[in-house]
Length: 133
Image (cartoon, rainbow, N blue to C red; front, side, top):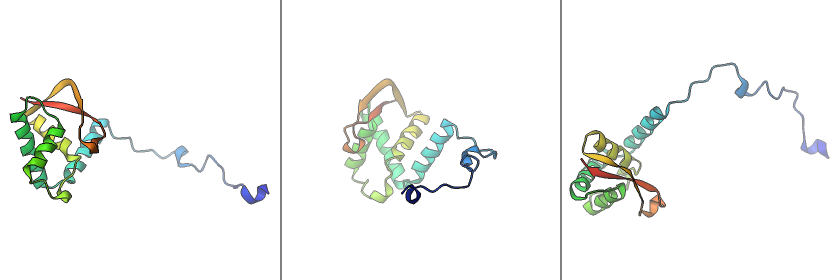
């Protein structure tokens, strides 16, 4: 009965595995490189029209709220009535928009403060809190 279920190979078990191959392996990207690549991919997945609208909504939140999160930016996008083309939207790109506003000196992180997202799609994720500069 064992012969039906088990068959031995004549090939060496360890020597054929690529894990033990003498060829050099490309080094893993640094964390900063991986983050930059992820941000670029997220930005590439959103339309220029949507990115511009999201930047406008960040500016509105920064000028009207003492502190805000990406939940507030999403609410502003929804209130604008212009964020209606689903194919133009890339939720991952909201991080790109926030980082661009931070680098432009428009907003800053509120250090040591996070809040729980109220958007059902975020499943209670912790969000960074931002404020106008």
